Length: 217
Ligand SMILES: NC(=O)c1ccc[n+]([C@@H]2O[C@H](COP(=O)([O-])OP(=O)(O)OC[C@H]3O[C@@H](n4cnc5c(N)ncnc54)[C@H](OP(=O)(O)O)[C@@H]3O)[C@@H](O)[C@H]2O)c1
Image (spheres, helix red, strand yellow):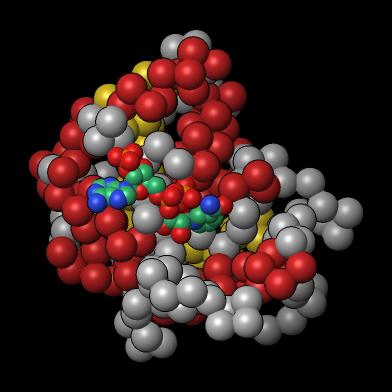
C-alpha cells in the first residue's frame, strides 16, 4: 500500500519504519522535511515531503503530530488529499499544562474526543483511532511474555476499520473494535493510564490486553 505519514516525531518514524519493513511504499510529511533526511537514508525507498505531498501519496494516511497541532497539520495536508481515505489517528489531546502526579492533562473532556473534533472538521476523511495507547517502541512487532497485546480502535467507517485491522494484525496486534468515533472518548484516555508508570517510575515496557472468556457473552 502507499502510506502517507503526517509527522516527523518518534511515532511517525517508528510507524514509518514498520510500514517500510512490511513492504509498503512510505512517505513521511513535515513542515521541515530536511529534518528527516537521516531517517530516509536509513530506510531506502522511503520518501519525505510536505504534509500535502505525504497525504497525497497515501492510500492510507497516518496522523502522527502533537494533538494540539492535529487540525493545523490536516489543514496543511489538504482535505482533497484526505477525502475517502482511512486516516489512522495516533494522536492524544495532551494539554500544555504539566501532569498531576504522573497523570497527563487533556484539553478535551470525557464527553468528547479529539478524533470526533477532527472527524467533524474533515467529514470526508475516514478516521480510525489506533496506536495511541502504547509507547512508540512497541507499535510494531510488540513482544510481551503475557501474550499478544490488544490495540483498541474505533471509527465510523467499517471499510476503513477493516484496512486498519489488517495493518495492525500485520504489525503483530490483536484488535478490539470499540465502535464509532465516540469510542475515542474512551480510547484516548488509555494514553493517560499507559503513561502513569512511565512518568512516575520511568517504566515504559507494557501494553494493554483485553482478556475474554471462550464462549462468553
Ligand atoms: N511518543 C509516543 O510514544 C506516542 C505514543 C502514542 C501516541 N502518541 C501521540 O502521537 C502523536 C505524535 O507523537 P510524537 O511523540 O511522535 O510527536 P510530537 O512531538 O507529539 O509531535 C511532533 C509533530 O507535531 C508536528 N507539529 C507540531 N506543531 C505543529 C504545528 N503548529 N503545525 C503542524 N504540525 C505541528 C511536528 O511537525 P513538523 O515535522 O513540521 O515539526 C511533528 O511532526 C502525539 O499526538 C502523541 O500524543 C505518542
